[in-house]
Amino acid sequence: MATRPTGLKAADLKVSGLQKRYGDVVALDGVSLDIASGELLTILGPSGSGKTTLLKVVAGFEKPDAGDVRIDGADITALPPARRDIGMVFQHYALFPHLTVRANVAFPLEMRNVPRAEIDKRVSETLQLVELGGYEQRLPKQLSGGQQQRVALARAIVFNPRLLLLDEPFGALDRKLRETMQLEVRRLQRRLGLTTIFITHDQEEALVLSDRIAVMNKGRIQQVATTTEIYERPANDFVADFVGESNIFHGTVTEPGVVSLEGGRRLFANHSGKVGQRMGVLMRPERFGRGTNVFAGEVKEAVYLGVSFKLRIACDDGLELIVRQPARGPLPAPGTRVNVAIEPEDIHVF
Amino acid sequence: MSSRWLGAWPAIPALLLLFVFFLYPVVRMLGFSIEGGTLDWYTKALGESLYLQVFWNTFEIAFWVTLICLLLGYPLGFLLATTTPGWATVGFIFVLLPLWTSVLVRTYAWMVLLGRNGVFNRMMLEAGLISDPVPMLNNFSGVLIGMVHVLLPYMVLPIYGAVRRVDPALVSAAEGLGASNSRIFRRVYLPLTLPGIFAGSVIVFVLSLGFFITPALLGGGRVVMLAVMIEQQIHQTLNWPFAAALSAVLLVFTLAVYAAAQRFTRSADA
Image 1 (tube, each protein chain N blue to C red):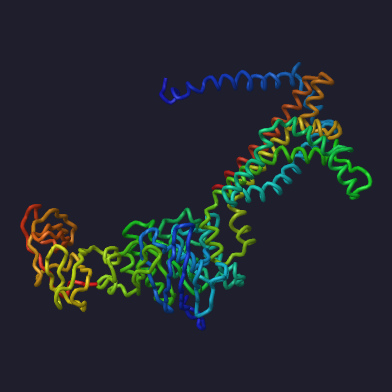
Image 2: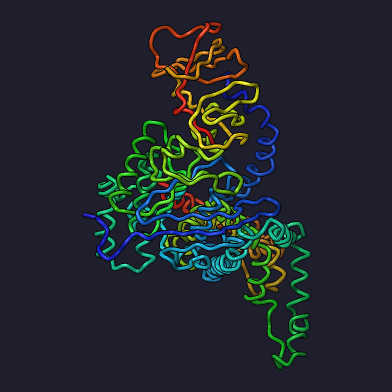
């Protein structure tokens, strides 16, 4: 079975102080990251956030203006891509259209002058691993999107790379298939112990797959943390807003345990801020239920989402809230008066 | 009248034109070649060694012209397709400029350059590279040089198109998977641009088969290609039926090359 040959250990990656400009556009503005051996780190950000540039710099397709990239401590910033031993799955897979599945997967081994018999063995093992045994002689265009994705994955891992890079690989798949592939990639990555960087703009995907998430915006890393940390305790407005649905407000600490929002509303919230300090307040829509902070208001908009109702509520104190409620009973009509509440510990202050 | 024929109306002037000025003359010419109900002219064209030699010359020249165009055209097309847009524009002007110039003018220019007292020979003599003028005109190499120059753009353009169609991500992928530049070329670019190589080669070969002005002027009557011989039959010996038979044979050869090419491309696609 294709487990990692003994003696080959997944590498750790360290990038520090990366800078990259294209003319006036700053793509990377001082990016530093540490990725532990065997870890799956997701780089999450909107388009134009610099995440793709970061991936290109790690893969060697772009040279940074400043900073360095180290694998297991060795500086590889100046190495060409061909000599980095990094497996990559491209956005649209980039399978060689003129080569069969077998030849595509054999390609990196042939480039390394691996003996014929060894190539045959490793290609068929890897194809078994991605459940594509029997498809060896097909051309990429004769495969479905999911199958092409598996070939791309097989090709990226067959040579035991030191690092695996995934560049928005699920973007072209439909939802069901995407979820299957996400879990499968995760399973494979764990089993092979591959250090992996996964790029996406899809926050749900990031939450499903990652050990840790690095949220990027405007060429900077906004926060690097575990998935729960990112969701529950975002470091700033951008992270809070980009990951998940959110109600974000700003206010001032008026006494310990209280934040007064712009507009006057006082919220009881757990926080460590000092009196007078300006802070951001995040309330996740699904955290509303019973609680000390009660909001009275009128439903402006109500949407049925299967598992839940999503309500937009205009509160009497001027706030507008997005609230999720379990879908039980009839959907509240616009204009209905409602009370919603939230506990202090469900409010994140940053 | 069914509706699918209604769309054909606007094409009628062009179809008429083709019929009157192309199809009719071709049929009329074929008629000449079998005048008197005999195939004698064809027996002569395909049976006498003098004429077989001309057919052979024609194919040989077409082959070499195609090969040289390919060897020169591939790197050029590749460069144009992969360089920056600015340089590509400059390159294109150089490739297309000859196409906008009359073949006659270009051929005379080559006579000035290649002649016994031409520019090249004088330069080499003055530089002391040679002691006697090298014959470059009125021979095989003269015809080759002239024809390659005229036909090169027809090779460069399809190859340029084929290289442009190669997805840059494939090149990145190959690079990332450990391929050196030469292996990226052999394993990715070359197989993916084969259709362009093939298209360019067929165009150049087919055009070479019927080439007239350049071999007539640069061959100086010593390198006889089929088209040159047909012209001689019409203007010098006034043997129209024989000229027609030779033309028919050339037409068949050309169509055969074309059909073989089509077949090959289709089987490569499947």
